Image 1 (cartoon, rainbow, N blue to C red):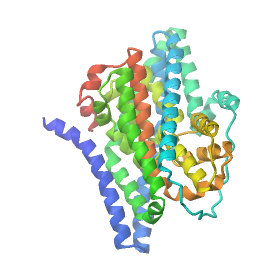
Image 2 (image 1 turned 135 degrees about the horizontal axis):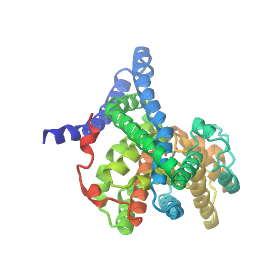
Image 3 (image 1 turned 90 degrees about the horizontal axis):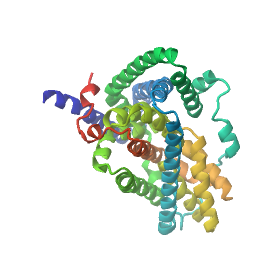
Image 4 (image 1 turned 60 degrees about the horizontal axis):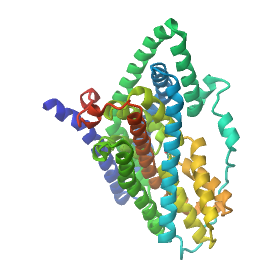
Length: 428
Ligand code: ASP
């Protein structure tokens, strides 16, 4: 009993860290608006240092964790032909949920008209990045040098290399079996590191929030209130209504249990604004608390962190309609379809890091001939939306993992339904 209390307190501590950080940030800004001392020692001092160390430590684990756990997962697949099915299902679900998200966002934006009546008040410029061609995206899946892929954190290339390595290990017999025990042990050690990090998360999350909120000006948010609130509304509906319907409909699992267990992952996503940096925690939760077997989770989670961005797609849908309305451009149904297609495909080639949604938006605007400078209108309020949509992105990654695992017979439903699963291991 007392142990349970102790375990629960990690989740509570992370939640408290987040709210305390938000409160301290807002208070600091209100009480010491222009204090160089506060800025020098706290905002750009202590909070900045602690927050960055926290994010760096999470990122530090991503590459080794993905490689090792995916090798372990692949070589323990009894039947390698399963891999094709697994890949097809995951990619299919990731793309479909993204398309649903953006279609819903566009429909809501057309209905609510967040950009109507807004005066053009931007001289900001934005340099668009060219969208890569589909052929290039496919070619780029294959690393010429895996160490380059590791060094650059190129997730899709790491996934491809780990899959091939794992398959070869399964096929080679004895030598494969021997190094598998080594990989298993590595996996355990890295997972332990994830737990250690989760235990310092309350401080990291506090520092990130305190810094951000002491620097955020709410005036810009008020001036773009309709756009801001609409994106927020669609994000929340997608996470709390669409996901539960899909999860219940396709896997028959209880969405309330799912959302409860996702709370920590969502806070990590929210405070880091990076699906990539959150990945260690997503993987831990998906495999240890939601009961997804490692052979599925180690594949679907890193893949999702890279190619699945429902929250980002929602922002792009609303932003495109918003910018079209501000610039008085009429978009046709064909244009909207183009937006859905470009945004869905753009999410495949871009990694889940802070702010990448804006780069993708530039590609989408370019495709339908809207002025890319329109991004200047909304970039001021993007950080908070980036955080919220990242929380949605990581929730989508975990949901698809559960559905795919269920369909493959790789979901331990007892673990999923057990509210206390793995809580004990989480406290050091
Ligand atoms: N920050 C988001 C993520 O990591 C991507 C974005 O929307 O900018 O998932």
